[in-house]
Amino acid sequence: MIDWGACLMSQQMSVFYVLEGIKLLTKPGIKKFVIMPLVLNILLFGGLLLLSSHYYHLLSHWLTQHLPHWLAWLTWILWTLFFAGFFIVFIYAFTTLSNLIAAPFNSLLSEKVEFYLTGELQPNRSLSQNVADIPRVIGRQLGILGYYLPRAFILLVLFFVPVVQVVAAVFWFLFNAWFMTLQYVDYPADNHRVSLSAMRMKIKEKRLDSLGFGVGVLLLSMIPILNFLVMPAAIAGATKLWIDKLRNS
Image 1 (cartoon, one colour):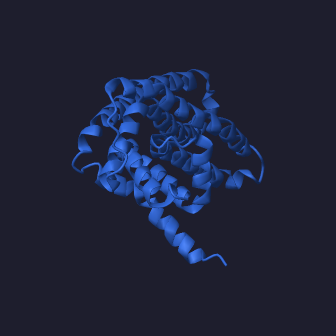
Image 2 (cartoon, helix red, strand yellow):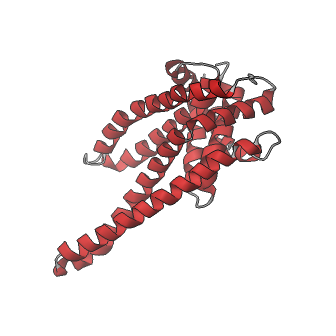
Image 3 (spheres, rainbow, N blue to C red):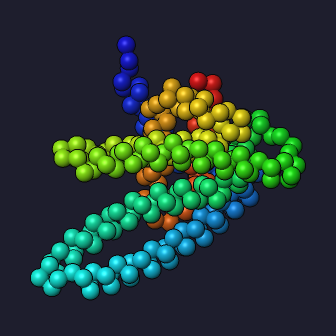
């Protein structure tokens, strides 16, 4: 018989793995490996913000020129929809791009976090070996993106289906929480050369724990300033989740 109380408690605890990740970033031997992902995060965030500002002015000009005067009352509705959509797209674009660009550094950060927590997985790899790993690490992240995009498209279609659209937002949030888990758990899994399919199976076996972690990452992504720490904190938290609940599943 399933103990639903224990399952719910486990999921609630998993939400806080990303906060555990923030604490791990300050530990000896880890801090210096946070700098590069953090700098890349800030630069990418600033670049996307400038790009968004550019398109904001273009859209504002277009609305001013093309919206009839008698429909001026629709302006605030259109802007509300625009900002809501922009916020969602911005978060996922920022997360996806930052993971692709910083993938090699993220893999190294995960390795150092695991060594701090367990004393294991500290290979003496040369610089050339680390460089040679870059295409594989980025390729795995692209593989996860390939898993995500067709499923995301199907879910987005649900927003246009009457009645179903009421719960589409809930499905969208949960699916993206699942995607966050896939994206960040891949780093410790790849360090152990666990295939993408095997990694997904491990996550499915600990479905509630994995989903709880992804929810925590999404919530942190929505908090200004703290969202700069999302990527390194999620990597550290995912590595701890891997050690505690996934690697032996």
